[in-house]
Image (cartoon, rainbow, N blue to C red; front, side, top):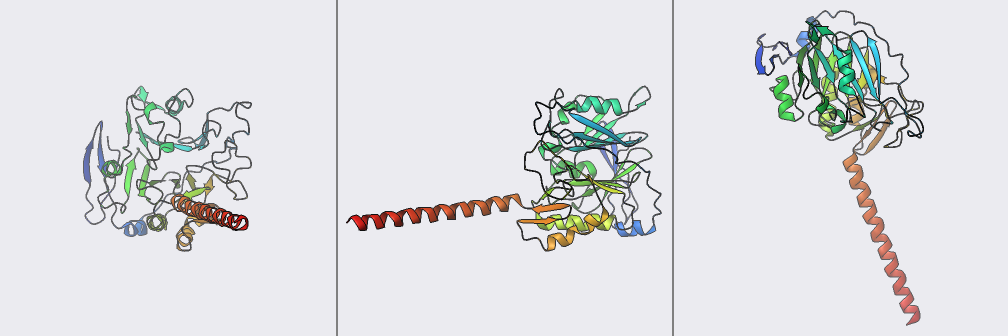
Length: 347
């Protein structure tokens, strides 16, 4: 079976790789603009985001919550939201179903199937083919634990393959030969999903563009929340890369891995299990278009924008540590000065 299908622009040839239990054919588009300029894009399959996402509770023990919410965007595309009461991360996961295979994007923040019956739910959503469940590929937007903690639930299931989480594993699986350049293609059978390198939040980060629905599944790269920056230069280049890829393609929605802002654009307290009046999940092309300029004016620490916040947690911690040390030095200096005055007064 071919998980990945695409073409190298300069040679129009296919690169074939072997990846048990399926054969993998991978193509990296070297010159995306030449492809997009001549391609005729079909109209996206419409879907609905008319859902009230589980907002958790101020007292989760007093207000029991279902651990997992499932919403059918359209019959072959499912959005799953892990309850904020189950984990403050409150991850959004995505299941895309083709005629031959299915793709699960991220497995969330909770490993225990009793607390979070993710694999059981996914298997129930998968259709049968040839009297057995459709083969499933479990992929990740990036390697952070809250996006892959549920992987063990799938490890022993038949006809399931899990993409490696380390950078070399990601590059090898998708066939990237010039990371972070190029685009890989997942063929699900009548449904192609493009894989776009988007490092900056994490070195392994990728985004997924679904040609069926014209949705960009952006993980933590772009979402209504805190965009945590590991490498600002790489992040900006990723934003430019994605914008260029989508320049001539339809884009219905950008769906990220979390919602961390309320409708007014203010962040919830870190670790909060309650998200009242939550910001909408979906972002738009305008939010992506504004991202490179946001990085150009970023002060390196913190900047608020209408639908997301840029922040560098490491730099912020260092700055706080420096301020704390400075305050401590000032206090010590003040105490010593006060003691000296008292000695002089009593001398």
